[in-house]
Length: 328
Image (spheres, rainbow, N blue to C red):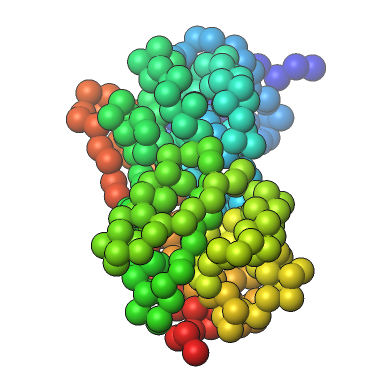
């Protein structure tokens, strides 16, 4: 026999309306919510989530759309978002776009169909340009990518300053022919390139740069080609963890000694960067804080839809390791 919401209400000794509010994160006391949940468990009732979404403006679900779930940065951010969402009684739909604007558009349509309460989004530059926040029907918080900060809330790293820190660190250790490898799909790569170029210009040095798809495979190919050229750098800055990993693979395949023949530095304190001999110098991003703040900002936006837009800019932390030891 099918169990109904009326059966749950009778078991819990409350009204159907109270059961409905408890299921929809409505204004009920913790004690009443516990009684309803116990009655649901005892009766075997399964709520019709689709029907409830159609009757309500929001689903109690948020969307998390990330650029590449293989990138440990996004894995860590996703975990932090989910932790805060869970404590708030909300579910998370995770989507991976592979830096593809078409997939971004598809997943945004899915979020509309699912009537999500809001979305946390890491977009490509093309996705940022096409983003119509007002037309989506739900609030958006951008993470890692800055382009849409004027139209929605955002949590970002101070990318220019962080990239300049890496350059200044290498300059202090005696390196002058410094190259930069940057992702070619996001505003993050562009901002880090700008910080790199500004720091090199201040030092009166040319800012040699290459751009690649943000994957270890693309980075490995780009660095392998660069190392074979006459103007190969003596130090290299990579703009994210996957590009740094690809650079390390290219260097090892070419038999280049780090840092004796090529110093390396990059972004993201992924676990392998400390373990890889001689240890990679990196900017550690506050990944937990990025995810936590983004989810908290989304919850604030849901509570206060008319509040002014906010942009939170966080700082990275330079971790100097053996890959950038002083030039001999």
